[in-house]
Length: 314
Image (cartoon, rainbow, N blue to C red; front, side, top):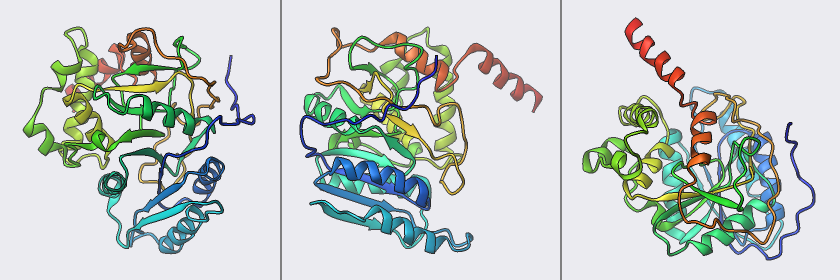
């Protein structure tokens, strides 16, 4: 069985009042696709942030200008704010500073990157759950990407997870309280994430994320989201994830900050039904998380043994 994109006409039962942050860079094609969905959602306030062109890339300044024009071509009643960099900051600084800027101006909102193509119901899904969990400090983010819809379908419209997926997400100003894009600083201040969210049987995911955190802290990976995952675990916060995949990542083409294609890219999307239904128990869905570990992170005994063998060989 395979899923096909369900982009049948979705008619929201309420207008969108939630602001949107649109993160762009140098990809006109994907930007145009994502913007067309934002355009249909008609947010009242649109924040657009774009990193600056890389000097070693010919004509990238012109491409960035084209992308910025596409992302601000608003034809509905909307307040537009922009943060366009003249110089290239790279993924870690450009994105983290853009999100910080967004939450300096808004108490909550939706964040989309230029390669995260949402289903139309994604916006209402985020809006309703931002309100539902606005004052619940056990919840740190709302996520629209779910890679295991074919393997496991939770009974409710969403489930609670320990894993942050930032391909289309929403949060509150409080989500970034304590955030530092320099993960080394965070790890030196507080390093209790293991005991906060894992138990003794979680040996493989602990090893996986320990390695990921160290790589980011040592500057081996230029990213911003690993730091946010670390922060959420430090604060013992869970994540709300849609039981249907509401985001398709179309950004594995050249031009992105990150260009690696994996099995999570181009997964089809669905429209979620309203009214939303809530889980009967406000607890982490262990089965869903196990599926995420296997499919999204490929955390298996076999992959762990392979990594250990590589260490011995080198």
